[in-house]
Image 1: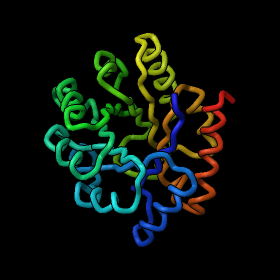
Image 2: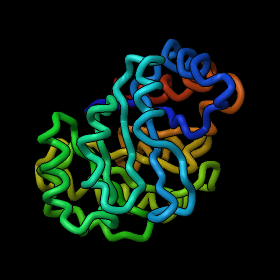
Image 3: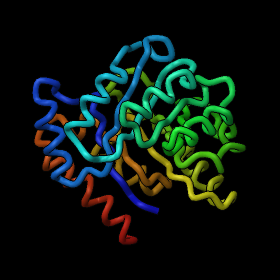
Length: 223
């Protein structure tokens, strides 16, 4: 299991986008997290395929695309063509989750499934073998800068237990309110991929990335 950092571009200073992405990459960021919001599944609207395609010119890191949109199955092909490497859809947003995960794999991307804070983990139990990753939201999706919801730690622990019991090699990603004060308890609960937005892009990007990577490397090395 690899411990990875995926900085969220939602928190970029877009007047310095290329500069900040480069700084994060050079400091050791593993992936680039791209949040897509449609104003329906979540209240906010962010960005779509053309922006993803333009950012592809700024980084060679794998694009970790999180679709917070209704009926994501209608956009899988387009995001793959725009440069996505891993596409995550919400279990709450697609009627036929099994089919949608197959669809992601068919376009050559790794498949992820996301759960909102109050969504039971049982909703993904039977598709774990199709999912490269489960993304546990630890805030209610739609806005950056929210506080981590404490009960989500129990869900992360339960997800790790379920994954291990099924013998799956499935990553657990955590997104929402991750910061220096809670990253260790998130990792201790069983997560191995961290999404951080404000905690990376507010302040010194290089220093922030290096801080998170140092902790992730400790866990990679077994503490």
